[in-house]
Length: 342
Image (cartoon, rainbow, N blue to C red; front, side):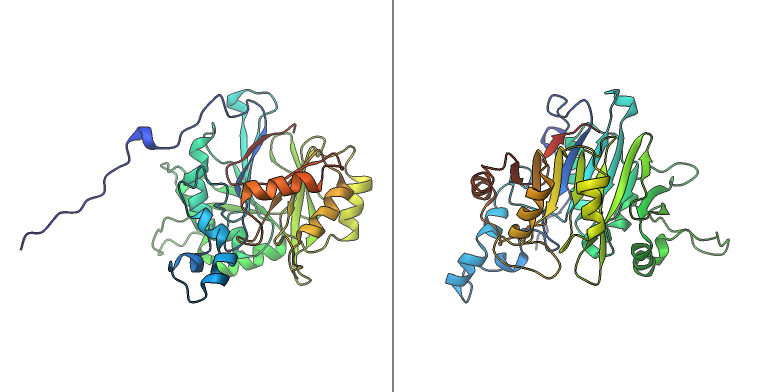
């Protein structure tokens, strides 16, 4: 019987995503690398079969999953990976002075890197920041090695900024990623080179020269403190990706002491459009904070896959919902780039 050889054929260079210098801001910008919930979107269970045992229910609860599974994820706003944000800092507009920092490296991190980073005019990532100790925030740390260049001296450690609680969980989950004394008798294994740096609430740190980021504690379920962040010289961007309740000291920082003017951009958690949740904000909770903080623009992230209408329909709804507030509110989408003044 004849056999057929099978091989891997490289994609033609012209079919690969590439940076378009006309679409990437020359100055500082943020790019949403992931905007979904922990499960992402589409949900696998919604795609198992075209004839589910409860078709009426499945068509209702899986509608957006099926939209998300159609076509190319590069152009499908319903396809969402775990929450993650690129901060590309370049106040001088000199391409040689650009610094790139990513907030969170969750379970979908590798997919995020290969989908979106080639579409941006950046040459590498300089640091990571972790919000909290759940897998949708740090589960992709092992994949950092895939974006680290090898040299004769090995991989240069990448700074990872995180709080003490998150570090303890990372240490138990990925013990081989924790720097330790060199054992001359141990096998040399290629793993990500990471330099873990502790950060504390309300204590600014600088992952890049002249870029100040302030950690803001958030309640993410009553048993977890997640870090949000205010960044930029005027703290013009607020990133609050995972919260069920804002502590009084964080609210005071945002509304009274820390922010000197109206934020340019607020990124805020909203898991469900209709239902309350014990570890995340609903749309109603997010809307309350949006109106209190009163940014110029607000982007929702962390949406449950089928808990909002399809992306374009949801944004029409949000525009109507906030039309009297003077705030541009919309669902974020993976790959969305926004120019910011940092």
